[in-house]
Image 1 (cartoon, rainbow, N blue to C red):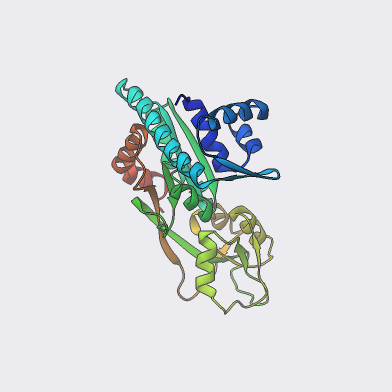
Image 2: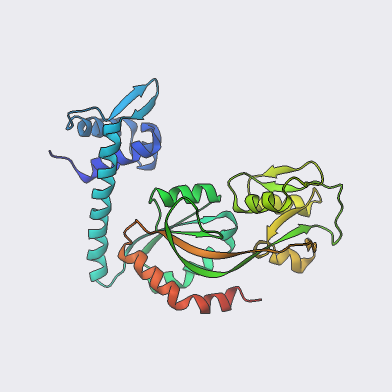
Length: 291
């Protein structure tokens, strides 16, 4: 059976995206070119890899098994490339990190010093809500994730950084019970914490927004109150455009942490980053995050 690693990448991306069009866009290929490669790859197998339903693609049980095997082969091939670069003392390669939304205030400082020491590393950072980050971590599509709570449905190792404090925040020091609560969307860590804190005692009609920045701006405009991580409103507190409103059982305290899937083989670049973080995290925290 003769196939190329390029074909394995194409097949894997089509399975992940469940779409030839989306896979072609991600791989920077034309749709016809990708379709030809996919057809050639599929013809190597005795059983069907896909079932077509209109414009959508459904992977067969056999095709799913081939996908998992392809992932293993690609990961081993990638690891071989990383090893080659590592032995050249370049520590070149890619590092994929996803962060929950509020982590955007943290992740630049965590990686900046590392990149100064290893400038040839290709860094890819994506910011999303917790649900999406955990899903990618579970699918082994990441090297690391920055989260404020340990994922429950994936086995991870962690490197704890520092505490994450969440307070009730408004645009005035006093609490007005007539104003609504402003929530993040479902799937967000902050949303989960607010749901647990308020439960059924929501004082008035509430609404939700899809980013921390949108929530912050809505609170600043006086539309309502929200529980927000302090790290995301440091400037606003200093400017007194936002205020922490003391409440019973607040702040909610969690821990910022870098986590990685225990079942995923860490590349030399990822291993180097983890070692660097363990060695330098105290200095990074003292420099950028100490009050």
